[in-house]
Image 1 (cartoon, rainbow, N blue to C red):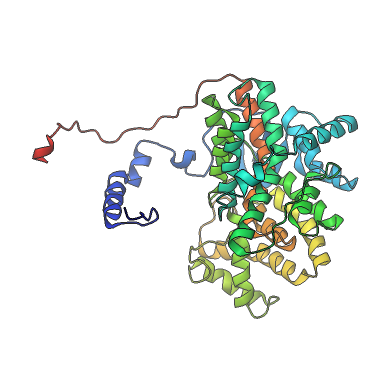
Image 2 (tube, rainbow, N blue to C red):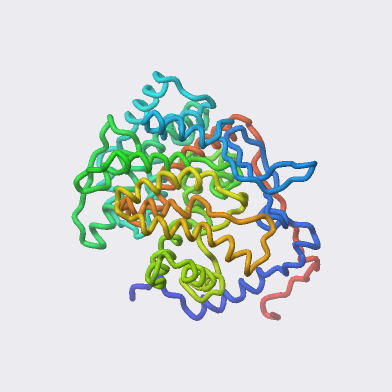
Length: 455
């Protein structure tokens, strides 16, 4: 029998897909007629309340004279302003990932001893089962590291004697192990792909127990395992800023939904990874870098505001880059006047650009940050304001760190699994019902069945 090409889209598939599209199309006015919130958001973009959380808080408005108005964004982890947290550990020249992870998971800032004990706990879990790299990661390497990461997570289920136990102690143990292993699974997956598909040398470095999570990422990834203190510090800040962002973002909501069914931790985290992989969620920083690459090729003078402004107009008019009409990294579903994560990040980005000799590029980013809201306001109605988001600078940071673009979204996942774990524990702690939203059927007619020979 001839080998079938499973990637081929045949004429039959095209025909059936068109039938599916036609049958699945719902008139947009019906959403208004039945007061259905598309994307679980109202007309102003505000999310529909679907639950309660004590883990983090995203604030982008303030009430003045009884009216809610846009305000500079603020992000709180367990009641602590993320700006204060970053300033706290960075001013004392400490790494913050482990400290802030402890805060999100257990609800309080750790003492010196608790921090050290927690670091040791994570370090002890930072080892894969025997032959896992050879038998799982090195086999059938994928070009997409998020798929590789999800596959590895699901495979770890087979190595866990208590995989289906959803008691809190066991789930916490599983979450801590996955938090520790995500960097290894991501980077080893990339190394395998880089070796087998691109012909590069294969490097599989073991993590070092004395290193922080950020340091281990650079140590494992780089052939010579070297990095500067500033490189490790800014990667650590990036992990903290991406660690959590409320219960309403797509992947965290997915975590709540899947957890509510009482499925296992590995399936839950694989589902969250599938959500984060989507370009509308976790892949935006790659688009920002690609957009700037084209901008730097198209604009002859990076200091000429009129040239830069002209390119931004072309982006909005679908005349440049991917012709989507978007300026990537600008705008957010919640924040309007500012994204606190971008604000915190920018100071560190400037320092790294100096170390790397890329101040011209950083100045271009800063100019676009200033000009983009003006350009958007000139061409489109702005209801709540617009500003750059954390993706605007994170891709630039990862590029300066020499991280391959294939790892941009996995780095996001390495950070966000802490938030997912906290939300999974919260969902289980409240012992709620399975999350089951309602969809209104709009096909009102009752159709008589027609025998197959009469159709």
